[in-house]
Image (spheres, one colour):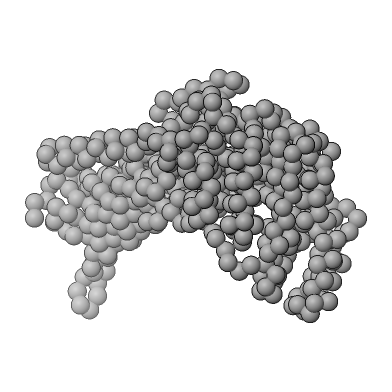
Amino acid sequence: MNLKLLAALLFFGVASITAQEEPLSDLSFLDRTEFKVGYTGNILWNNGLQVGAEYLLLEKIKVKQRKKGPKSIIHQLLLDGNLGVSTNFSSRTDTGVFTNFGVMWRRTNPKGKQLSIGINPLGYYRSFLPETYEVDGNDVNKVFLPGRGYYAPALSIGLGRDRKGKVISGRYFNLNLRLRTPYNTGTLPAISLQYGIRFNFTKKR
Amino acid sequence: MEKINAKIVEGMIVLLIVFTFSSCSQDSDLDNLSDTVYLRHKDADMPAYIYGNGSEKLFLITLHGGPGGLGLGFRNDMFKGRIEKECAVVYFDQRGSGMSQGSYTEDGISIDIMAEDVLALVKVLKKKYGDDSRFFLLGHSWGGTLGSAALLKDQNDFLGWIELDGAHNASGIYLEYIANFERVANEQIALENSVDYWESVKDLVQSADNNEYNDDDFMKLNREAFEAENKLRDDGLITREEDYSDIAFDYNIFTAFWNTGVIQAIERRVFEDVDYTDQLSEITIPSLILWGKYDMVVPTTFAQEAFDNIGSTSKKLVIFEESGHSPNVTEPELFASEVIQFMNEHK
């Protein structure tokens, strides 16, 4: 079900915005791209760092007339990619590197407050374990770079703040759900918080 | 821009190096071991946390309860302050528990495979610390089932077996719950302790199927067993001084809880039919059987059963008068004394 539903959601999401999109073709790649860096983890047992990039695919600006003047609300569809690393510094049994890619919908109100929902279905998590020995019958061998790879899609919902025209162009705070599968006999859900800044290389203030 | 890009890349590389190196084991100091070693066996990666004095290469391997318990759940102040001074203690997260990971189907979880995991762990410890390493095995509750299974496969590497309120006869627990609840309820009512509660327990027992195993009833009775121990504690029969381990930061609790839920659902099916009583005579290594007098989870009947059936000529039964299912927590000093004395006698 899930892939079909996801594809349908993405299609209709993109189609509905495309219908009213403003031309972005004049903008360069860097104008349309914001980079981000921040904390990822659940504070108590798993902490790490995450970097990423958001590429503006589509943008729709709705202008509403109000007594105090026009009010514009920006809807954006972005390509989202992340790379991160996290660990449990206490036990070293929860160390891993992850990456994921997908799309993000973001709404920005006139005050610059943002709400975003991201679906990153293309994800990979590689755990890194401490010293590991593999036993096969009577053979015992030390494992080189021990750990396991997992398919790791992610879903996030977040709040943010836009800082128009600044090098540090915004802040974000996301609640993120990342799955790891196959994990033991099933799928491990992992919830984390993400807090960080977005920045770009074109705005100089 | 290039400078910023370069700094970001540089930062990531440094972090990766730090994480990679932090994932490697520290050099072992045998007098004061603090190692985490993973066992990879049959599609599972399972951590063994090794602490204590390894100068004599004497290891006490602990098997947690559950299924789905936590290896480091044993490591309270008593273990740290007394037992780890005498030997190295191996706290093992079993397949599907704690911070174990891997990729296998539900068929990849069975007592047979998990018993092989225990024997594989011994091979890893020998590889890391030397073939002259010596081992004792301790199993609590479900760990008693697993330990018995492992020893019945191969006991040659073990100097001794410590069964702590162990479920060597898991299939017998259900009917014994009914008999034990009835007996304890009558005793407590006669003593006028928590009379209303024990009357409600009698009602619960009477509503259970008392002819054959019933999964729903088993779960109700099992939950009630823990509650009953709380009542016995409230009434002063089980000591209130408890020595719990501090594992607040050692486990990602989300991961551990998820693992526990999954493994318990799978293992309950496996667990309910197991009875090693008739095979205990094949366990011939020195054995120490430790039990809480007020154990409502694995009733004390099984302590005598283990003692009577284990085939060793050197065996001892100790009943902890002020304990329930976990004497290591409620009477830690007596527990430590018995374990250390047993290991010293047979090492």
